[in-house]
Figure (cartoon, helix red, strand yellow):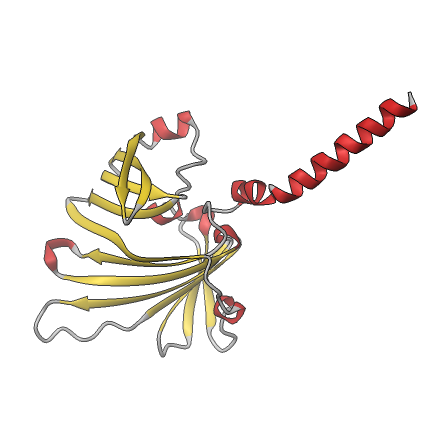
Length: 212
C-alpha cells in the first residue's frame, strides 16, 4: 500500500498547491467583490435633477476594507456647498464622517439594507424571490460584460442594475417615487492603494448607530 499512500500524498500536495493558486476564488466567496482591489468612481444624478454626487471608492481584499469619498453638488442657487463625506468599511463596520467634523457614526453593516451592500452573487433563490430580484442576461457597459439585475421591491426600489464582479456599474432606480440614476465613470483594476487610506481617524469620535 506504500505506493498508494505516496500517490495520495502527492495528490493531496498537488491539490493543496492548486488550492493555494485558486485562493482568490475562495477569498471571493468571503469578500464582496470578484476582484482583489479597485478604484471606482460613481456619478449619481439626484432626483428631479437637484444635483449630482460623485463617490470615489477604493477597496482592497475583495471589499473587506474600503474607503469612500463623496462630493455632492446641489443645482439650487444659493444652496450652501455640501461638505465632503468620508466612509471607511472595516469588516462588519462602516465608519462615516463629514470633512472638518470631529464626530461621526459607526454602523454594523448587518443592519443596513442598502443597494451598495447587497451581494447579488450570494443571494439564494429564496432571498431573490423575497427581495423581488431577478437576474436576466448580460449587457456591455464601460467595456465590461455586466450581469443584469432587475429589482421590483417596495423597500429597496424598482429598476435595473448592471453589475460586474458584483460592483454596481450602472443603476436606474425608482425608490419612494424618486428616480435616481448612477453610473461608474472610472474603473481602475488592482491599483496600488496606500494602506493608510483604510485607517479610521483617531481624532474623530464615532457613535454607534443602531437601526433596530
